[in-house]
Image 1: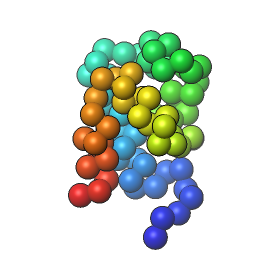
Image 2: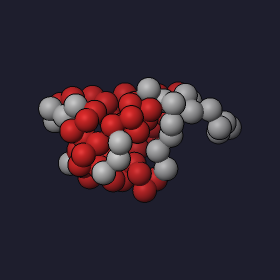
Image 3: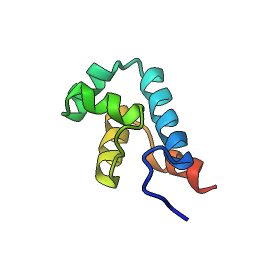
Length: 78
């Protein structure tokens, strides 16, 4: 059953993956926010699970990081 909690197990796994990818790519929250076109506070809220990404935002985030969005989804689907 899927709840509305921002901090679901699946969301935790996905956000940890995105944060790790951001760091691997050498981005700070600020540099990533410039690429995504959002305030850096948005990146912080996403990574701290205070805010969920919708699917379009997730795809933009992955594109900005140059990572395959399917890779992240597989972590929560398998």
